[in-house]
Amino acid sequence: MNRREALSRVAWIMGGTIIGTNLFLEGCSRKAITGVDGLFEESSIDFLGNIAETILPKTATPGAKEAGVGSFIPVMIRDCYTPEDQKVFLDGLVKLDNAAKDKYSKVFQDLTAEQRTELITTIDKEAKEYQTTKKPEDPNHYFSIVKELTLLGFFTSEVGATKALRYVFIPGKYDGNYPYKKGDKAWALS
Image (cartoon, rainbow, N blue to C red; front, side, top):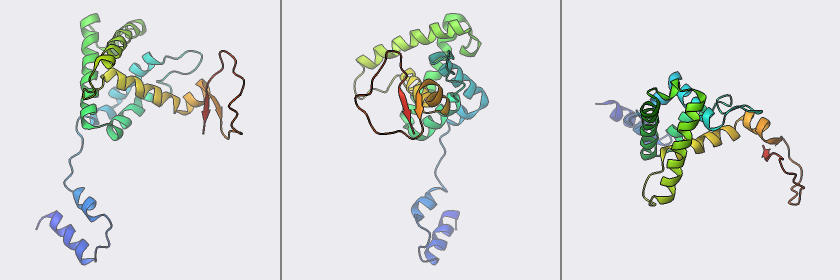
């Protein structure tokens, strides 16, 4: 008798008191996602943080790295993206490093801030062009995923919501005709 059969019999003997027996038993044989696990290593988090910081650098407000976007991206990729998109993302990170090596003979992590910005700007243009010409069944460009997650991670973080946006913990009534002055920050509501 194997483990699965034993668990199944125990569940049967207990009169089916284990809710979700199939899911419970499936957990014994389900394989973990292997490619995404490497994103949770400290070096990968730093790498993703540097990419995000290049997209949203620190200015008068904190940057994406300070907001913890490097730690946010792996969780979102693992939990919210399909295996196909995960592969596109992981392959894209390799492409980004290769583009840095081709252009500057260094990996992305070793580039100066100016070189990172120049490289990211080039890749962003490439991604925009790809997104406008792709067919519906084609995958997204990896940099589009990186950029979307950077913006999502930053503006949903405490730092992004309170420092870059005007934050109101408990908003008042809705006023669709609220006066706007040029340069006002957008609102972040809880």
